[in-house]
Amino acid sequence: DVKVTQSSRYLVKRTGEKVFLECVQDMDHENMFWYRQDPGLGLRLIYFSYDVKMKEKGDIPEGYSVSREKKERFSLILESASTNQTSMYLCASSTLGIATYEQYFGPGTRLTVT
Amino acid sequence: AQSVTQPDIHITVSEGASLELRCNYSYGATPYLFWYVQSPGQGLQLLLKYFSGDTLVQGIKGFEAEFKRSQSSFNLRKPSVHWSDAAEYFCAVGAKSGGSNYKLTFGKGTLLTVNP
Image (tube, rainbow over all chains, first blue to last red; front, side, top):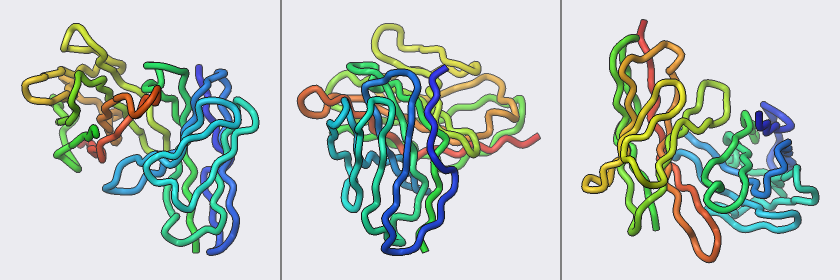
C-alpha cells in the first residue's frame, strides 16, 4: 500500500516562528502536493512538485515556500507563521500524467499559530 | 477555469437508508471526475473516478456515481449506508492547467452523519 506520512499530527507554534512541515512518501511517486484544508473552503492547493528541486505555485502560495531535495520528501515552510495560517495541512503524492489526479494523502498536520 | 459545487454542506441519514450526494461541475471540455472520502482524523482516500466510457462507475466500499453531461453532475450514491460511512465527501474535477500540469480542483465537501 502507498503510504504518505507527515511528521506531526498536531503542532502549536507562535506568531513569527519559522515552521517546517515534512512529508514522506514510499511509492517512488514523481508528484507531491501540499494542500490547506479549512472548514467551508475545502482543499486549496498551496504548492506542488513534479520532480526533485522542481516546484510550482498552487492557488494560495503566499506566505509559504517548499523544498524537495529528495524524491520521497517534500517540505512546506512557513517563513514567519501568522495566526491566519492556523489550519489543517495535507500532503499528497501521485504518479505522472493523468494519474496525477489519483492522489494518495497523508493524515494531515493540524497547525495552530498563537 | 474548472469549478466544483457540492450544494449540501451536511447530510444526515439513518443507517440502512439510501444515500445520494450531489456534485455539479463547470468545465469546458469533457471532465475527469472523482469522489474522495475523508474519515475522521484521516487523509483523503479515492472512492471512484470517471475518465470516459460507461457513465455509471463503481467504486470502493459499495459506492457508485453517475456522470450526466446534460446536467453537469456526478452524484455519488450508495443503496444502504453503514455507520462507518460517516465521513466528509469531496467531489473533484481534473483538468489540464497550462502546459502539462494536471490540476485537481475540489469541492468544499459534504459532511455525512449516520444515525443508528
